[in-house]
Image 1 (tube, one colour):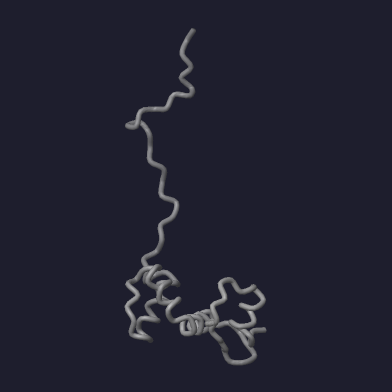
Image 2: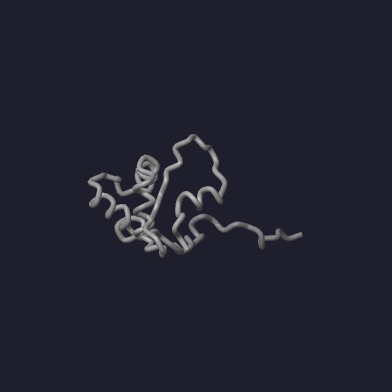
Length: 107
């Protein structure tokens, strides 16, 4: 009987590396990065050019962060942006409650 070589893995030297399908843009070239850089300029904060720093700042400055998201995305509303913070210790508010509190004037 002959050996079945159809399932034999070629040696590492014969294997080719697949092409890279996607690489993230530089921080300042991404929309999120440009948003963070604008926050740095407008509020004099250092977000370190990374996602984690922006996340921490957004949690520490909840009202300001969502106001800036509202402005950045140019969300239409019949009234000016309104935001009331949830500072009552609710662990997981309902989606209806969040949408009412975060954007009561959005249509």
